[in-house]
Each structure stands twice: as structure tokens, then as C-alpha cells.
Image (cartoon, rainbow over all chains, first blue to last red; front, side, top):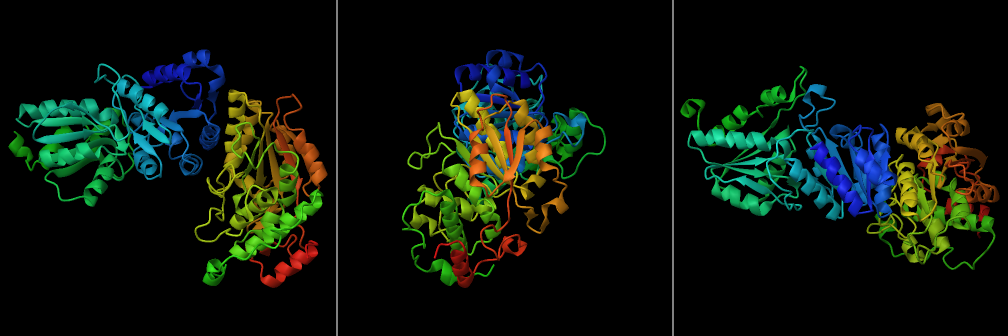
Length: 313
Length: 292
């Protein structure tokens, strides 16, 4: 994803002279092409994220379109107040890009994991929150960000994520993309969980459960038209995210549900548990721990449909 | 602060200096800004009078002769930017902008009243000339850095002045900005420290070891100087040099000031950080300032 990001942001910078890239001293060589094409618009802001975010706010106030980029916890929670005051309060078009979101950098420990960023950022007025699912969606999300006139946050994975799409999709705030049709259950996949959700759906198909899979790339605003349909059509709807069950996409949909009429579907949230991991964990191991591996997703769907583990045999 | 619905909801009478004939002398202008600052603070029951009064000569120096800012075209992209980072002293900023013609007297009279655009801490849509919502300390210099960088990218050549408090220098982000601005060669950026030697509850030097403050900016790579922050001529001379030296260094001006400056019973008395002025003290202050 980060390679697609670097390539697309470079293309966009050539097209749009308002785009300025601010990096928190990461991405060694990643932005060489950007620096060659627009050297005056690439700024290494150092390891000083609070200053970087306010700088981005200042540039946006002057009419530029800054993109602030570093590892997710540092470009979100570390400088949350700067995002709140200098970006959201002024409602200026700063694009905040977190790399290594969720459990992507699980093995670097809890300092580098980010399972709370969606909760924090979606609570901020004026903020749009996106989680692209594959390299093509990263490109689509960036194009969306450059066309958008307001604060926007997108959380990326790291590199080597499987391509699900074959071309850059058209994306919009409050949009979603259905990648697999189904009749019984619906998985609302957030960001990098998409390949696992597709695999879980394939496995469920083997035991006669037909599962819809949606890339829920826009967490704020939500695609409420899609949600309205999904909660009528399926027996169970589940969010799947590398984020805490508290306040993530699952939390957002729970809030939406509580504001509306009773729905047919049972709702479930698959996400990280409310604790830090104190053992070393690479991504797959961490996902397993939180029930976010394919097995865990399959089990959650069965539970939501009222099936016991025995019935699944 | 006492809550008084009667003051807040009563129809506004005109501010005392609303129709004062124009003056050219900068010291007379500063005295008027001080009077209005105390008056709106009294009427709006907003604290931080003393923090406001220490900034007034800087405001006068900037708005009357240094800043390229036209109250009639407040959003001109070529304008210089002035960021008032110690937002709690907003009464002084609003009062200066009213005397400068950027805020109408009727609007100024609504300061800190329900429904007013003139919030106790400046908001993003408060008034022409208010370039940044401030109140949370330690933001202004970093935002100013972004504006100064933008001026280079856009080729507009405008300058950015940021007023910070000495207490505000407790905030780590101020020093993040202090480190990066010289590396970016932002000669069009100027920080002014309103060094009134106090913060909310203590002497600033007792809370953090600010001294030697000028040297701190200097060794960080800024063109740093100290001066009397109530000497408008000295301030204007130093401020006018910003962006003209050609050495790529941003400017830091450590302005020695007195909290509560201009009113004898407020000067250097930190009780006036929070205290609200009553009618009698207001009259007294106007007398001392030569305004009545």
C-alpha cells in the first residue's frame, strides 16, 4: 500500500501544484520520485509530529493541500490536539495518512500498533475517515482526498497487500464497494481485512452459508443506503476491522443502528479486544489472538447466525 | 468569575472610545487600546486583563506600520500574517483590531456575550485579522511555520509574525518549531515572546528554566534579540527588519514586558491574571491612561 501511496501522491503532485508532502522522517527512498519531481513541495518535518500537523494546518490556511504522513499512532494520537484545533476547528483540507495501521506493524509492539485511531479521529467534527482495502483503493482514496475540501484521514496497511481490484475504483465519502455477493450474512470489511473476509466467505460457502463481502472504506461518513439494505436483507451483518471493538467502524454502525428503527439482521463486531498485547506478535499471530484471522471471522459469522461450533461440523 | 446574567443580557451601550477622534501618536493609540481592552474585559467578565495589557505595545507596533494588512481586504493572499498565539489575551487583540478599523465597535461590544463571534479565545471565524483560532497554547508558531513555508512555495513573499507568551514556551511544540524553522531557512518568519515574567500561577522562570531565553533562540539558529516590549519604536525597528537580512534565519524578538502594563494597580500583580475589573477600577484605569 505504501508504494501505491507514494506513486499516486507523486502523480497527483504533478497534476496539482497545491499538493505538499509532509513526512515525519519515514519512507527512506520511498519518495525519491516525488522529491525529483517537486522538490520544493516535499518537507521532512522530522520526528516532531505536533509541529508537523500544525504546519499542515498553516499551509492549508494559505490555500495549499498538505498531506501529512507517518506511522499511524504518531500522525493521529500523538498530535490529536493539533488535528482537532489546527485542522478540524478551521475545517481546512489537510490529508492525514497513517501507515502501518491496526496490526500491520504488530511485531513492533503496542507503541506502533493503532487500534484506537478510528475512534479518536471520527469523533472530531469535520473529519472524514477512510480505510482503503488494497493498493487500488489507496489510489482511489488519495484522489478522493485531493478532490475533497476538508480534513480527511486515511489509515493504510504497510506493503505487499493483495490486490483485490483490477483498477482504481471511483470512491466517495460515504461510499463502499461490494466485492462478493451473498444471501445469508454480510461482512463489512474495514481496510486491510478484505482478503481475510473474502477467504472467510469462501470457507463459509463450503458449508452452505452465502456471504456478502463489502469493502467499507468510508467509516465517516457511513454508506447508510448500503447499510439500510444490508440490515434488511441479511440475517447477520458483521464489521471486521483491525481496530478496537470500542469506537471503530463497528462502534460507528452500532451508533447508527441505535438511532434508527429495529432491523432484521443481527449485528456483530469483530475487532481487537480491550487490552494491549504484552507478548511479541507478528500480524497473523496478533490477528489470531484477537479473533481476526480467517478462522475467527468464520466463527463469528456462525455465532451471529445462531449456529454452534458443533452444527458447523 | 461571577456569573451575572444581567450584564450579559443587557442591551449594549456604546464603548467609551467608539467615537474618539483619530490620533496619530502610537503611544496615544496604545493607551486607547489598553482602555478598550479593560472595558471589554469588564463588560464581558473575561479574565486575563494583565496578560492582555502586556501585549498592547506589540500589537500597536505591528498593526500601525509593520504588517501589510488592509482591514478592507482582510483576506488578500499577499497580506502579512499575524498570529496571536496567546489566545487568552484576546481582549487586547480584538480591541487593537477595533481601533485599527477591522472590527466594528458594535461587534466589539459583544465580546464574550452569548452568540458573539468574539469568543473569549479567538475562533476561526471570529473577525477579519484573526488569522488563527488560538487558546490552546503552543500551536501558533507551528502554524506560522506552515504559513511561512507556504509563502515560499506560492511565491507570495509575505511575512508571518507570531506572538507567544513566556508561559506558552512551556509547550514542547514551540521548541519543535524553533528547531525546524532555521533548517527550512524561513527568514520570513518572526516570533515575538511577550516576556512578562509570569504565567497563570507562578513566575515563569520558577516553573521552567526559560533563561537565558534570548540565547536559547540564538543557539537554535534564529536571529535573536531582546528589547523593551513597551518601546514601540524599538519594536517597529526590529519587526521591520524581518525578511530583509538575506541570511535565511528566522527572527526571534524577546520582548521584555510588564504584566498589566499601563495601570499601576495591575502592573506585575498576578492576581490580575484572573481578576475581573469593576466599574470603579475601570474609571481609575481610564484616568491613569489619560483617557478621561
